[in-house]
Image (tube, rainbow, N blue to C red; front, side, top):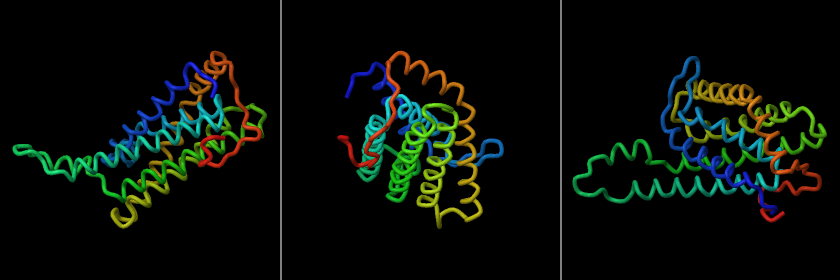
Length: 223
């Protein structure tokens, strides 16, 4: 892979956003008319990074970042679970608090990983294909359309797998709709910033990738 100046920085920020969002999602909050998990405040930024990565560096480089984030999230989840299962030291009285906040259940872990995997790859695939179809024009149409699809897949899978049968159906639907509307609205609102970053990276990195002939199999890490 060609050495880029900013690719690794974006990769690091992408993974940081993903991990912070996963931890923050342990709280369900209400913000104005929206009811959603706390991670929703930051998580849409990962889709902005995903759009930028695919638009500038292409699907293959974006795929590497998505997998890096996947394994980082898996490692974080397994570590939290293992630490929670280990006996607390004598005099440490915060075990209950730890389990409530970081004591992730297998169901939450599975929901998070499945939703992330499906949503991010749907987003990246949609943007890469649309870039070819639009011949690189109308970036806004690609970023918003890919987010509508990717965030839709992510939100539906995560909330359903994690909370179906746990939350009342009415609250479940409220969380799904609030999450989805907020995330898509967030992406749309930050479209001007996305334009600025994309233009800067294309000019600085001297790259503008079109995925002609790309193998879009998410498991084809070497192609």
